[in-house]
Length: 130
Image (cartoon, rainbow, N blue to C red):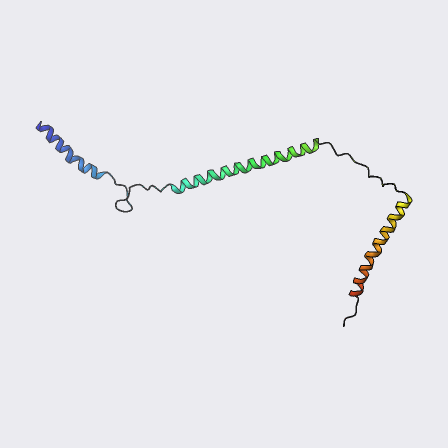
């Protein structure tokens, strides 16, 4: 039993120097962890940005594809549509000579009244300055 205690004591004393020989990780400041948690954060951000850019490119490509398909579908629908019939111009209504004369006289009266008002304005614009 004594030999076992001596052997355990020798092992404990020998293990202490071996533990001291293990290279310690560099610590930027005392008490800080030996490894940097944020070391790969920039790479993670870059990978995420690349993923988001690729996703945006895929969405843009899909939008262009849908736009092209929509345009083609619209052209197909317009091509399949029946053309509108060409209507001949409507004929002028037939009037009696008395109706024609009454319309002509009323149009002449309207022209005379409107030209009388314009003549007053023209006379006022052409007046001599004081």
